[in-house]
Amino acid sequence: LCDLDCGPHGHCVDNACDCLPGWSGELCNLKQCDPRCNEHGQCKNGTCLCVTGWNGRHCTMEGCPNSCSGHGQCRVNNDAQWECRCYDGWDGKDCSVLLEQNCSDGKDNDR
Image (cartoon, rainbow, N blue to C red):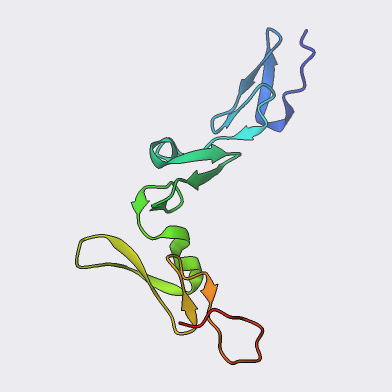
């Protein structure tokens, strides 16, 4: 007889949860990440959170910070380093800074 509720992702064997593939944790309630995540990221319930400088679903792609925040293109520069080339109106290492468009927009971050 087993007293643990292992949920839909496992079953109880000898008072311990035996998890189905892709699941872990004491109660089989933590979704696992692809093993490649461990190289440059940390698994958070099935989502691989990348360390700075790494991107992609499994944090296996070297690249630009925050994928240029959706406001630029990630390119390799002349020094073979990844960098963001920000679209017009955006600035910063990861293109996350909205530049001043006119004097009345309440922003003071023009170039």
